[in-house]
Length: 371
Image (tube, rainbow, N blue to C red; front, top):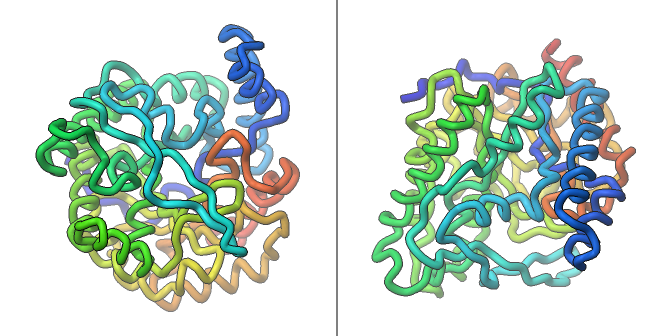
């Protein structure tokens, strides 16, 4: 079983994973969908785009890079497509924005007993690793992502009699994927966790109860699912959990501070660090950080990937100092609150905005922590 980390994030400046697809790649996705581009040409354009985005991350000064999730239609879709037994159906929740406009979305759905039939993210790692001397991070949807968004209808009737039996099979998928990733040289993986953040929203909790579920039981279930998935990894493989309230073209799924899940998640999850969304008041204040044990790190997501305005150095340092009232600053790092493009369309920012924000994370990290 993995042992806890040293109490600091593996990198003082990090980013969540998804990056803006360049125009050529966005067009390639459209052309392929319309039957106007074959797989060979699509793969060529994708590979060229990934080489470019690795260079961009290095230009920003980051010591950790990835492929920008360029091979994915959304941050969770590839995992579903490559896990036998999974499909897609409409979600029971909706995205919204500051004007209360809503957008429906699709969600993972269990069609039959699930199992891993081949690599899910390992090929992404293998392509990027030879391109850089930086550490390559691989991102995956959290176990709860494959369960929560369709409520009690997450699976076809008769497929799984209990939530626990589903998560037992899902844990095997993660365990096998992490083992192959480790064998390929991967040492850093991140779970993107939206449902646990949603369970901090009073309205979402009420909706869960109306569906016949207990939100507090789900918190326990999802923390246990994380531990089943990653708890047996090698000691030198770092796992972070990114907490997000949803991110689709700048829209979000929920709001509310981390109080309803903080103690159970921060103390109970067998991971090395947390990457926490903190860019707007929707995320609440920093007081839940008092529950983070001394042997775990926190990456503060206080740079926004949703708006173009570049946060000032003074603003970010003040926010870090504010967090330091509840957790030792030596346990902290800095990142954008979420990815820049959880889907192919991306957020309403430019590639220049993205580069500036990543570089600002590096700049502030060097000033605050010296690394």
